Image (cartoon, rainbow, N blue to C red; front, side):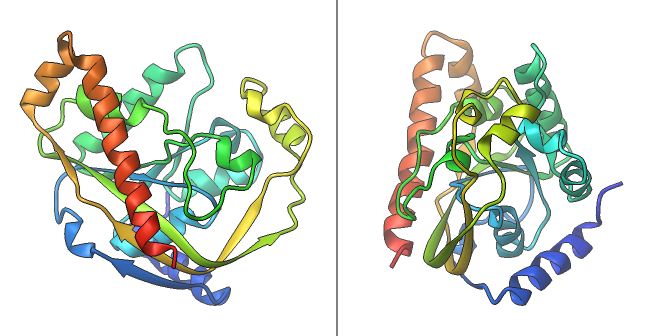
Length: 243
């Protein structure tokens, strides 16, 4: 059973206060007040889900990497917090769409980190992002959900520490051998934000006309355009927030 939304926000705030992490929120008026929301953010730290939960003041059901559902204790933590680990079967994409669509139809917030596993294997400067995977765009355009908003969010670090991680990438490969990025030497980077700005971008509302176009010959171009819009929005927000 997952933690209640109110309790989750209290836990998130308590943790951030306990480590002395200061967070400032900008453009919060862009957060949709109701309906289904797909939250798309950059991802550099284990703290990111907590920061976003506090910033929107609402539970976000995050899709998390497959290995998080395989590691004992970690599995119980992430599922207890309402996250859903991605499947690793031959039908993993279909299972992801099914789980996420069900949550969006229940008018919940679903969180996606489209950089995938890349931030877990190498340090990325605060103002840069890795290439975005397109799964979130396909999800938004194919989900039978009315009034669906895609909300770009930038987590802009102003002051942080890169602490010594005790998690070798080879260990993650043991739990998820299908991820090629884990099959290398090195350590999982662990970043602790001392001060960060949470910058909300302009939401993209998915209209029936977009879904019609997605089913047609311009569907691939629409997916690329939507992915580029969100990544560029986050890039601009990082430039504004990483000061």
